[in-house]
Image (tube, rainbow, N blue to C red; front, top):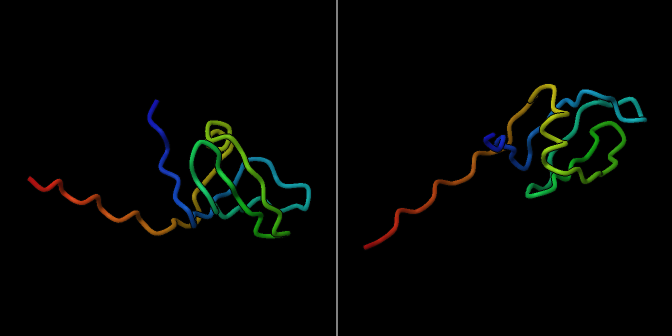
Length: 74
């Protein structure tokens, strides 16, 4: 299964609401774990990438695209 492209700065809606009542999160770090910050209470959590990908309901806003990789020089 291909890895879902998750960028720093993405705003996502997760399936279950946070205890504060918010369900929108901004991605602040990517890697094997995803760090996200609740947009309602500003709480930061770390979630394993496969779990985070399953919990995503919708992308509300996309972060900036990564720069293209440089071509190898010969």
